[in-house]
Length: 79
Image 1 (cartoon, helix red, strand yellow):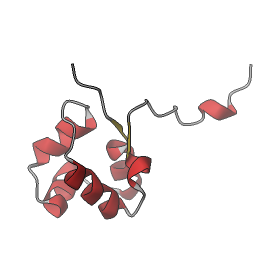
Image 2: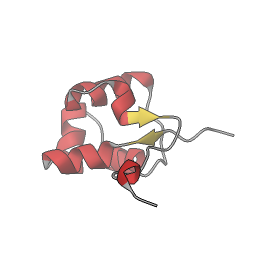
Image 3: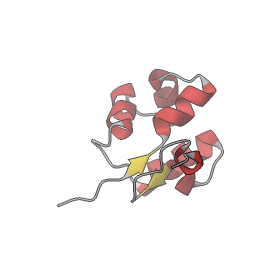
Image 4: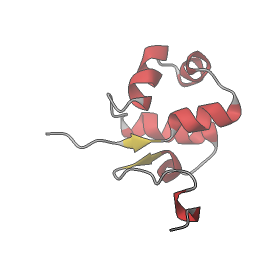
């Protein structure tokens, strides 16, 4: 049984206006690989995870986690 690796790749791409194909070309992977990563169907190697974080200029833990990321705005909800 494998653990799910959660990621924020789609959110980071959207914030920067980058397509899957553009990210794939920058990383040297097939554009479908980016889709598999975003959907959690594929866990990246450590090398690829570090390259993705470097591409977005953020620490790797901003992009990847073993726990689900909190929903945006979740901490600001009122009861």
